[in-house]
Image (cartoon, rainbow, N blue to C red; front, side, top):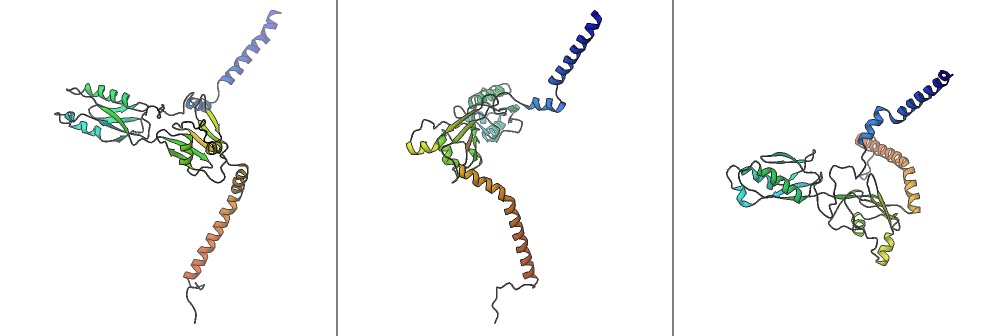
Length: 270
């Protein structure tokens, strides 16, 4: 009796174990996709708030300031290479003479200057203090929707929502009463709905928030603008076909004129 009751229970345990394994273990492709996911931030290797303290990102260039006496030291002539701005490599490094590649992504100017100074002191015979400078920095925010400029828009110092709107501009179909500032993050993304029209007409700057790097400025269309964009999407294939037919007709007409099969009409007949 005991053996008869124990067999189904063992089968149930085995079944639950198999189901649990299938639920927890996905396909090999799903496992690889989960490995690519991140839990916080934008997804870039370099993170920081450039509006508070500038940091090195992948599109920046780095330049160092050295004391004049260091450049005339015997055997240290290559230090002059540091005074020339160099872009950050695809692996996030810059080249430092006598040291080699140095990883710089995400570091502020003070952190980078201290790092390069410490590494140079280990290979040079004299004391040296260098200062890092981020030159030709390329920070930006994104503009989408009913904006004149779309995609990356350069991030200017102390940029606010109103500055960003006039920098990106807007179309005639824009709904200025519902402008969205989206701060992307893998864990806690933030979406701010701003009545930009009220800001312009009343001067109330309560919602004139600071724009940070990689913020998304989305300007939606009005209701009529949405219908216009929908019709534009629907008629786009028709317009393409009409342009193609007209283009073929123009090519055919030019060929007929060139071969003398059709009068060009450029000359008067007497």
